[in-house]
Length: 84
Image (cartoon, rainbow, N blue to C red; front, top):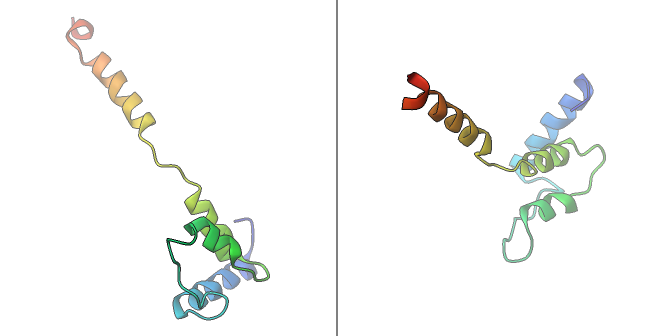
């Protein structure tokens, strides 16, 4: 994430604090009140690398367009028209 050894040490310590539910990670997520992204955004601490990592993970949009594109090309290449 653009950091060096110090930032990786901070991230590991933040992961340990998250797993141990130490402040600021002591309250649980309630889906009726807010989204997962909102929960991560309200966590405030200096150099919050775990928050940046979580928000990057949740910003990934899963889709299969590239996979479908490959199958379409393979279908064209393996069709009867192509093999003749």
